[in-house]
Image 1 (tube, one colour):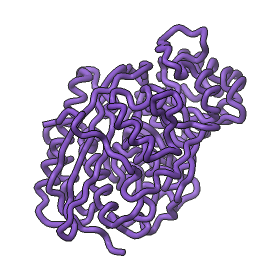
Image 2 (cartoon, helix red, strand yellow):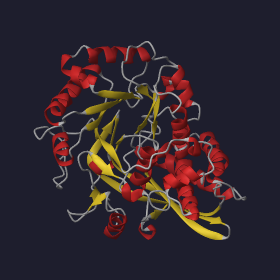
Image 3 (cartoon, one colour):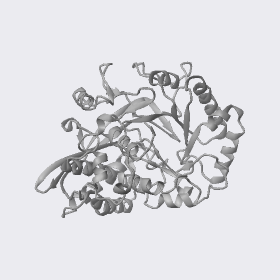
Image 4 (cartoon, rainbow, N blue to C red):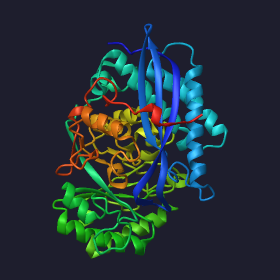
Length: 451
């Protein structure tokens, strides 16, 4: 099958307010509420119209971590990125493949956003959401699911037909332990008393968790103390557990990172945890991460990039400096994930990880999870179900529609739809439907337009 060629003649942008049930602290930021963005497109293929959709949380202090900006200013940066992407896609007059549209309109939108002062990571946000929605429309036009469509070359990209794609039925959930998360019932902190786990202990017991993502603050004494406490909980409850460590750009230079790792290695209480550590994610600030080598720091786990992934050559630049992989996140673009997966497949020493931007129930978590799992990622950070109560403020009818369409992924036993986590895993069988991972759509009339 050849690539679908389509022309997008309608793009609608929306948002919905999301309130977190628990504060999510990473790096220097604490998030308690933010909007989720939604994109709805209508494309024309051979005279017929097909719809596509996508969604992503507009998390503050991740795309742009400048302390001079308020959370609302961060949200507006991402709205600006979405508007620029919409305008660029609608300006494309000729039918073209989804990938070619991304290469032309998407790149033009990024250039406009950067020229207007947005950092590249924020500038990519809008085009990334448009890419997902356009891919959804193209797959529906081809009557193909995500994996089958990639194998058939529906998107027109140069990588998917060369990849050994997986048709995943399940994936291990890697549970985020944020810097404000309570570890045990005796810890002080937020407890919404909503029937959902509010501590690390309770989450392990409820979901059978065995993979964890631990946030670092970049301060040696504080990190050693907290990691030691987490290690005690995991040794007691986590079984044959595994962890990843996330620096979230908290280290200002490579020498400081080296001292931090030496301190971890010198702490007996962390010996077992370090043996079970799979990777260290983006410890250095993006301003220096691709300028300073980490090859001689003695870090004996793979160090990977995340926030530095704001341009096409980021992975190659990182490999030259001692990095051994990169994250897949749909908020950075599906084609970036496909390209990086293709490069990583050429070297068994490298790895592609699956990370989260607090993907919410519905389109965001479904598309992002299937993207990573289809590329062979076996465990993926999922935290939207932990920090937000199910579908949050979405109308109950919308949540029920997603639960009915994807019964293996959502549980409604409590009266509200929540992500189903059994034995620390997600069941993905219901995501293999026509289109990009979803047989349900948001209730557009209940969303606020982004104009």
